[in-house]
Image (tube, rainbow over all chains, first blue to last red; front, side, top):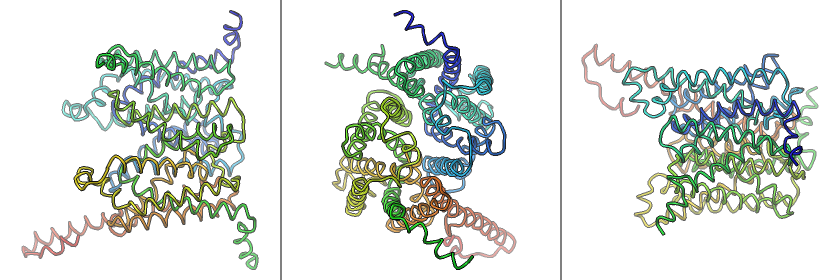
Length: 279
Length: 307
């Protein structure tokens, strides 16, 4: 029995998968706290899809895939901002247009070129088959993002809570805006490996929401988000070994389950308690 | 070479399945285009994206159970919308994040189901759509969905419009806004099912916002916007399907790229709301004010009104 339970950890590929999942889970969770406060859920969705043509183009040009992904993600955010300030179309619509246009371009290019990048790996992640170079890349990107998030956490928090206040006390909000976008793009690049383009947005929203249900203090919220995300990553990888299902999907579903628990049973705001109090 | 050109151009229509695929894409493109006017005005693009992903587990389960996939997708879509409503009402989380949590959970469940129970619905179908591999029964479903959606939109567009622009006014005028809200949501779910088949889950939102946004740049009247968006959706889907034959590539990709290009053209060159037109307008306004300052003559306000 015990042997079966620790069996996954005896394989090097499982240990590597766990390492990447935990790292990516950590930075995604920290970032998710800022994104949900700022109302940038759709931005996460859009940028994560928009990196796809960048990956394909980088492959064609022989560049590191992360460079292409980062550039494409940043381009998506920039183009959205530019079109918004130059037309009367609503921002959410523009985001929808830009990211689907880019994703569609990626699909067309992908079907036209002969690649060895497996489509499913980009879209759904390939945590269990991660290559050495990808592993190093994911670790480096994660550590850099982690450092920036820790150093700049107060500035970013103020920027997300109250942009006007941040500007009034003399912060460079434009710079912070682009910094947050850059962090978002970099995080998505790292998360690509773990859960793929399509489920990255879950990693960028759900942990923050779990924590927001449980805490009123930002620092504590961040700790809870990171803890729940790390637990989901480990549990998701672990369970996917046994049921032989998609790793990314297992991680995301664990996070969703944690959210359901927090929503119903959270000590302060749990739906069950409010319901009982009313009854 | 040139005597072969007509033959080459007509080649996509030589096979029955390709002809059918192009025609069905055009039809669905038209319906999505019409609906997109309401979606862009309501600011529901995230909702469209969410529903397109949330119906995936329904499609997979319906495929496994052998019932029409549209039925499964529809139930999953409404379930997702209901869950969003519930979570939003019972937590303090912002709506966009709530939508994000719910649709990713549904979508992850769908992907897990696909990996656990391999069937004729695979990950490729979800990403690329399956316009060429549609069975006759699927096409009948698409036609029924499209016809019903168009009928409801045509019958109710004025009510829906009033609700979108001014909910309070609509309520005061005696409209049942809750019913209208759910009508729009239902239509969105039904159309997302059709669009999923055509362009795949990730690109559905493109079909559901781009034609409407393009039309919005071209006209100020809603009735005209509806007509332009429907035609644009139809033509882009038709031409995109046609081009994809020559590209030998993703139909959905070709359709959405084309729609985006048309949007970009409108963004720059639209006669009134295009970027170039507004830049010129600012310049002209600048010139006019210079004139006023130097010559000290009164310029009739007509010029300003026209601008």
